Image (cartoon, rainbow, N blue to C red; front, top):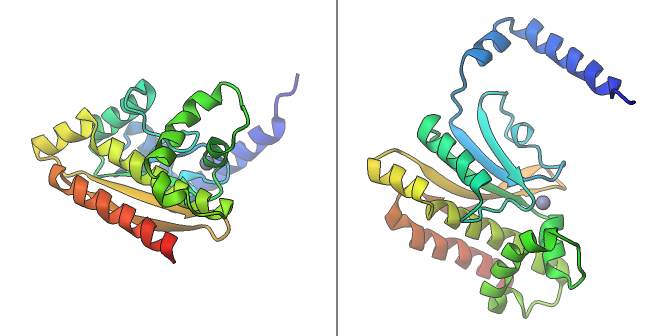
Length: 219
Ligand SMILES: [Zn+2]
């Protein structure tokens, strides 16, 4: 049986390195976590949340799934959101997609991929919603990039429409929902101009973010 010794060795080295830099780091972290941010991102191994924004353990609460979806009835994602907003009282929720997302690409081809096609249907719904925007474009790579962006915008929009976020705003709790996309080839994040801090901002910000994608589409 493999014990994956190399990973345990790496863990040992990492733990010792951190403890040498700051002997109080792990004891302090074990006592409490007070992250300001909830990151909802893709499971893709090339998009590691903490590293991208250069934050330490304890600074970012994270939920990841294939293609960073926020499905209205997904108890896993909603439970993370509820805990982050109501218990940890994070100030920001960011939905972070990435260009070259395999889930987004798979959602657009006609081949069967098994069970995951049911999950990817949520991205297909986004495609159908914005078919007029994406459809006429012939270049598949460009279509994929725009669908990655529109998927983020729609999932961030879904976050805003949860009872969890709406209740927080009704209580007067400061909370902002963002839509970002990550570029694998240069490690940079781009803000997709969806930034909502209250109920009244949802529709204008959705229009603004989709208009931005439309502008890019028109060149
Ligand atoms: Zn992905």
